[in-house]
Amino acid sequence: MKVINVALKVKPDQLSAYEAFIADLVAGSRAESGNLSYGHYKKLGTDNEYEIIEHWQDEAAVAVHNQTPHFQRFLNEVDQYLVAEPEILRMTL
Image (tube, rainbow, N blue to C red):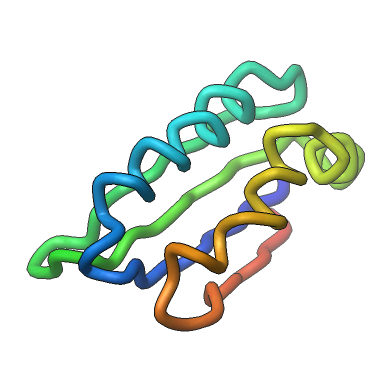
Protein backbone atom coordinates (compact mmCIF):
# COMPACT_ATOMS: atom_id res chain seq x y z
CA MET A 1 0.00 0.00 0.00
CA LYS A 2 1.11 3.55 -0.76
CA VAL A 3 0.28 6.37 1.66
CA ILE A 4 0.67 10.03 0.71
CA ASN A 5 0.14 12.94 3.11
CA VAL A 6 0.00 16.47 1.72
CA ALA A 7 0.03 19.49 4.05
CA LEU A 8 -1.43 22.66 2.53
CA LYS A 9 -1.45 26.19 3.92
CA VAL A 10 -4.14 28.26 2.21
CA LYS A 11 -4.31 32.04 1.80
CA PRO A 12 -6.82 33.30 4.41
CA ASP A 13 -8.84 35.20 1.81
CA GLN A 14 -9.09 32.10 -0.43
CA LEU A 15 -10.57 29.55 2.02
CA SER A 16 -14.03 29.24 0.45
CA ALA A 17 -12.68 29.19 -3.09
CA TYR A 18 -10.05 26.61 -2.11
CA GLU A 19 -12.61 24.31 -0.49
CA ALA A 20 -14.79 24.45 -3.62
CA PHE A 21 -11.72 23.81 -5.80
CA ILE A 22 -10.46 20.85 -3.76
CA ALA A 23 -13.86 19.12 -3.74
CA ASP A 24 -13.34 18.04 -7.37
CA LEU A 25 -9.99 16.43 -6.56
CA VAL A 26 -11.39 14.57 -3.55
CA ALA A 27 -14.47 13.25 -5.38
CA GLY A 28 -12.51 12.20 -8.46
CA SER A 29 -9.76 10.53 -6.43
CA ARG A 30 -12.20 8.58 -4.25
CA ALA A 31 -13.82 7.18 -7.41
CA GLU A 32 -10.57 5.72 -8.77
CA SER A 33 -10.32 1.93 -8.74
CA GLY A 34 -6.94 1.82 -6.98
CA ASN A 35 -7.94 4.22 -4.22
CA LEU A 36 -8.43 2.75 -0.75
CA SER A 37 -9.04 6.03 1.10
CA TYR A 38 -8.82 9.72 0.26
CA GLY A 39 -9.48 12.35 2.89
CA HIS A 40 -9.16 16.12 3.09
CA TYR A 41 -9.10 17.60 6.58
CA LYS A 42 -8.72 20.98 8.24
CA LYS A 43 -6.05 20.87 10.96
CA LEU A 44 -7.36 21.50 14.47
CA GLY A 45 -6.46 24.86 15.92
CA THR A 46 -5.88 26.50 12.54
CA ASP A 47 -7.99 28.52 10.15
CA ASN A 48 -6.08 27.87 6.95
CA GLU A 49 -4.10 24.62 7.23
CA TYR A 50 -5.31 21.42 5.60
CA GLU A 51 -4.08 17.86 5.13
CA ILE A 52 -4.81 15.39 2.34
CA ILE A 53 -4.32 11.78 3.42
CA GLU A 54 -4.32 9.26 0.56
CA HIS A 55 -4.16 5.46 0.66
CA TRP A 56 -3.53 3.70 -2.64
CA GLN A 57 -3.48 0.01 -3.50
CA ASP A 58 0.01 0.19 -5.00
CA GLU A 59 2.42 2.34 -7.02
CA ALA A 60 0.53 1.54 -10.24
CA ALA A 61 -2.63 3.08 -8.77
CA VAL A 62 -0.68 6.23 -7.86
CA ALA A 63 0.71 6.40 -11.42
CA VAL A 64 -2.81 6.22 -12.87
CA HIS A 65 -4.03 8.85 -10.39
CA ASN A 66 -1.21 11.20 -11.39
CA GLN A 67 -2.49 11.23 -14.99
CA THR A 68 -6.18 11.91 -14.22
CA PRO A 69 -7.77 15.20 -15.28
CA HIS A 70 -8.77 16.08 -11.70
CA PHE A 71 -5.20 15.60 -10.42
CA GLN A 72 -3.67 17.48 -13.36
CA ARG A 73 -6.07 20.37 -12.68
CA PHE A 74 -5.00 20.31 -9.02
CA LEU A 75 -1.32 20.52 -10.00
CA ASN A 76 -1.91 23.33 -12.47
CA GLU A 77 -4.14 25.50 -10.27
CA VAL A 78 -3.47 24.85 -6.56
CA ASP A 79 -0.64 27.38 -6.22
CA GLN A 80 -3.06 30.29 -6.58
CA TYR A 81 -4.67 29.28 -3.25
CA LEU A 82 -1.52 28.61 -1.22
CA VAL A 83 0.88 30.73 0.83
CA ALA A 84 3.65 28.08 0.64
CA GLU A 85 4.59 24.99 -1.35
CA PRO A 86 2.70 21.83 -0.27
CA GLU A 87 4.64 19.53 2.05
CA ILE A 88 4.44 15.96 0.76
CA LEU A 89 5.26 12.78 2.66
CA ARG A 90 5.20 9.45 0.77
CA MET A 91 5.27 6.07 2.50
CA THR A 92 5.09 2.44 1.45
CA LEU A 93 3.44 0.04 3.87
